[in-house]
Length: 288
Image (cartoon, rainbow, N blue to C red; front, top):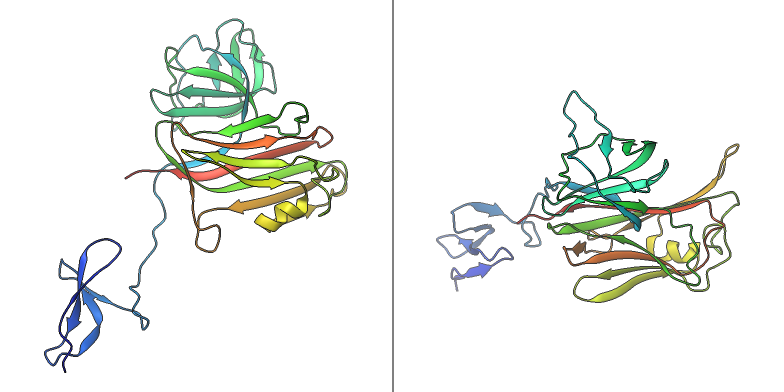
């Protein structure tokens, strides 16, 4: 008996019809509602092309706020031919050379992170061009730190990444460590294995601690992508690790955070014998 035409539904909720010949045989094709013909793979799957995101990228550190300041005048934005790297803070700002600063304009959904290279009374010079204009009446100033080699044994130290008014999809985190001593799987960095652990959690309508690393082996267990580097011939021993969330061959999901959500790393032990521990995040803004 000839096979009768029928409709099928695919993930885009568009109705696709089987391409049926006049004798009732079925071609290895489907015709969508616009009349376009799609050749199917031998297993019946539809071939697709994956296109990269074109939304603004996100490349930031997890940060801890350690002070506040305000700016006294609007900043000057960089242009294709200028690289302004200065802003004016109000007196009492507390900013010193080597500080990290963060400018936040929530109303305009923008932020600017940089390192301070010079302070002359209230004139602050940073190490990269000011991307945009930040208005003095809507901008919040934060003195921040990305350095996680701190003591969290008595009071846990929390380092946070948040979105502005636009949701973010975080696809990857990069851990880097430096120490004057060598590292191996039994240690955390170059320290003995941690008692409480280096924790990563998400709070976005639900609370979930995703990882709690006590040792480099724990990091390797979930990231696997862990590299040790020797100091050559001087300098630091190092560790780097990549935790990838997006991608079917990774964790299979991105971590989506909105204005009221947090991603956090929590230091619960004394890590001050490490020279440096930092975590960066990568992803992109979300648009409909």
